[in-house]
Amino acid sequence: MDPAIFHPNFKARPFWWEAIKMGQDEPIDLPTKADVVIVGGGLTGLNCAIELGRGSARAVVLDAEDLGFGASTRNGGGVSGGNSVGKGLSGAKARSSPAEAREWLRAVMGDASEGLAHIESVIEREGINCHYERTGRFVGAWTPKHYDGMASKLDALNDFAGADASMLPRERQHEEMASDFYYGGMVVNRTGKLHPALYHRGLMNAARRHGATLIGRTRADRLTRIASGWRVETTRGSIEAREVVIATNGYTGSLTPDLRRRLIPVASHIIATEEIDPDLAKKLIPKGRTIADSCRILCYYRLSHDNRRVIYGGRARFTQVTPDVSTPLLYRMMLARWPQLKDVRVTHAWTGNTAFAFDYLPHMGVTQKGLHYAMACNGSGVAILSYLGAEVGKKILGKSNRVPVFDGRGFPTRLLYTGHPWMLPIVGNWYRFRDWLDRRAA
Image 1 (cartoon, rainbow, N blue to C red):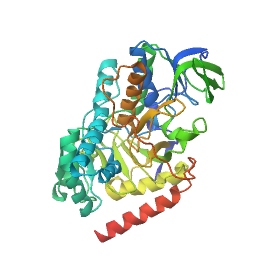
Image 2 (cartoon, helix red, strand yellow; image 1 turned 120 degrees about the vertical axis):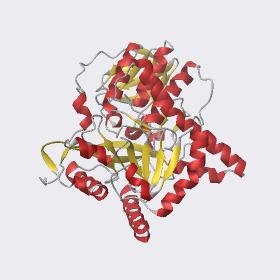
Image 3 (cartoon, rainbow, N blue to C red; image 1 turned 90 degrees about the horizontal axis):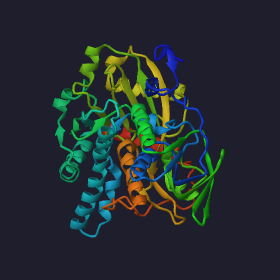
Image 4 (cartoon, rainbow, N blue to C red; image 1 turned 180 degrees about the vertical axis):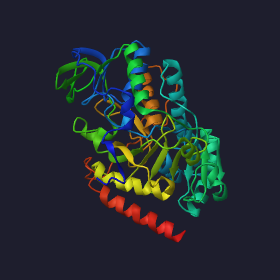
């Protein structure tokens, strides 16, 4: 490993895990019965379990690994506020009239914005200390054309998602970041950031308070329909339940092949730097926002919760690779934006799976066999999957007073696709070429 990049005490694990003890819970006995079994112990499953417990339903949450081992504690901690549906908005073009397209946008962006409101409500109600801040986001424009494209969506974002967003021209860019790398961008005030591992741990504690049983290191291997609902066969025995919720997102596997073939698991890689000078940190991101950009090879970055490190993430590769591959790539991307970090080394590097749908929209619903699900975060799962997990819980309880636009929508797949994303290296190289071409033209 290059000593100019890797710190001597480098760790190939999430920086966020320094704040928690991952995998320290003692195994507990598997109950024989439950009202609801939730497969997946991440943000989706825990928010569902909390909502079920508030309605006096007995939930059992199963995870094949330690709870929180997946993307729920491996993400960048950004909390979107309705600006996260991105390419999914292209579905407006399929509407039969401008009026219908506008109403569709209103529904999709409005529902996506509920994710932030839900997270803020849960954090306050359950007393979760996860360094949550509504600091906003700056989205840098990769090219002048991208800037114009953002500006064209500004009114819809403000009208339908209440984003409190505005455009920032390039000559004012230093108000948001110490870099001339972008061609201006969009400031979105109605977004936040948090400490992912502490948020997840707070959800675990809240779920237990509301009566849920949380069981890690127990893989669900088979689902069988029975008269009373379902039998879930696991590596540690079987459990019967009235309902089953699949909350596996980017880790959806052979247990539910029909859902797996509707998801494209994409690896997201992140690095954390060693501690930097506080004055430099303040200059890098003066207002403490999360930063993202508009290029196809997406990047997202921020300061850590203590404002001493840079957390830098992106699609260094679209598939799983080791830190010796991903870290130098991310490091070069970071220096392209902030050359002033050239002497700063990396202390942590890690990877997590996000999951994309073919229509770039989140989905919840019930399969033909009767399994509940919420998945397809499309890279913005902290907010939207926390929200949809809770909505699944309400739906099972019969307490929903509205139907989210993401509930019961057609969940597309492609002919012969089985869930193995063989095409990702090809797509990644194509995106890199297109980004290079756009930037060169700019």
